[in-house]
Figure 1 (cartoon, rainbow, N blue to C red):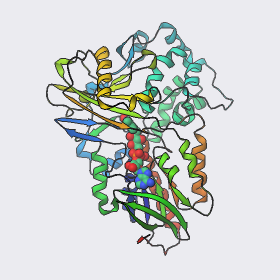
Figure 2: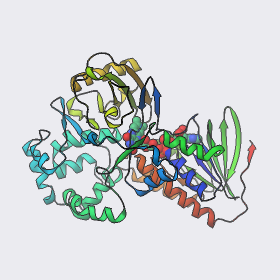
Figure 3: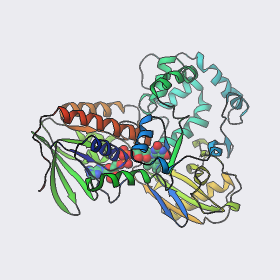
Figure 4: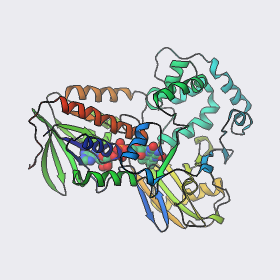
Length: 470
Ligand SMILES: Cc1cc2nc3c(=O)[nH]c(=O)nc-3n(C[C@H](O)[C@H](O)[C@H](O)COP(=O)(O)OP(=O)(O)OC[C@H]3O[C@@H](n4cnc5c(N)ncnc54)[C@H](O)[C@@H]3O)c2cc1C
């Protein structure tokens, strides 16, 4: 029986396992921790529903919609309140609503007249053709000017990657931007003319894609996939070593202090890059997995605070606020969680989810919870007029949160493709390879299931899956 092992029960691994099982492939998912979901973490307590990792899924691909349907979750899908469209960016120490139309752009107080003129000039800035890999900061300054970087893109980059715009690579971290410039010569022209191409491919741009969650938070998705996979998911089971055999791969497993082994025809690595670097491996050719230790994951703390409605001066209606570094706050931004979805806070209360750390302030993320609550409350006091003590406070520390697709990241991706060529039956998928958003990781899980399905269908029969003591 040709079977597949999936290392990691985050959303990538569970999606891959779910679709392989539907193709009739026997699968086993090995997860080192005692829970499924990886970075996804929703907690319901004291009348609050708190999300610590991702807050929403962006419906950028039909594969995302399909997974929700195939998992039987369409009735539990929760779309955000349509009034929660507004997004704020902090300038002059207060949140200013981002313009939603060209007219709004020319009247907004977010940018000076000079910055607005720079945007008007953008279609006439010559595209770069020398092949140099630029950081997002270099790219934005060249096309739109320094003010646009400092007061908009810097905040966006902190909100998405918790990253440093002077390090993140345009082609690696923002491939769509690089493609717009390469194909249309301009971001603005690309926005206008690219819409037709995206429609043909069935894709939706990230800034326009509908976002959603589930009635009990995002954790519903991994929990449901796990239920449907049943015994195939093995929690508290770390894969420590891979050995290539004539029939496939032997996995050394560590489960509650016990060492065991399992054999599979194919292996999908859907864990994190830093854990990949720690895997011992014995294969026909050297694989150099330790190189992946160089991928940087900055620390982030998620701080979820509840307040009485009357203790917050700002209406907090909208998605949330992004904060550029030049404004000098400690938090990277905040999501107006209870404005987005109805069941996040008890009646008369609201929930704000703030992020601390990232490349901007890595040392702050590991502060003890009491200090995190205090610094977050202080920033929220200045920005949103929060007073009084929180009625709910909870934080989670992600020591290594999000991989930074910095300039030069392409060499890691090339190495992954190279290893897949050399080490037949070993596949890589997930946030460290195919994009960091939940929608990217779902698509990555779907695609790797197809690749492994084809590989197993083409591979010779006679392979076995057995758990044997080491
Ligand atoms: C704080 C935070 C906020 C975010 N916000 C958003 C957001 O709003 N929207 C969005 O789209 N995305 C967001 N993301 C990104 C998104 O959540 C992640 O990129 C995505 O969940 C990663 O999924 P994954 O399955 O690839 O990896 P992970 O979720 O990291 O799962 C990998 C799993 O593999 C396991 N593992 C690793 N090595 C081994 C091993 N050797 N043996 C067994 N198991 C192993 C780990 O224990 C883990 O459970 C956020 C991420 C963070 C951290």
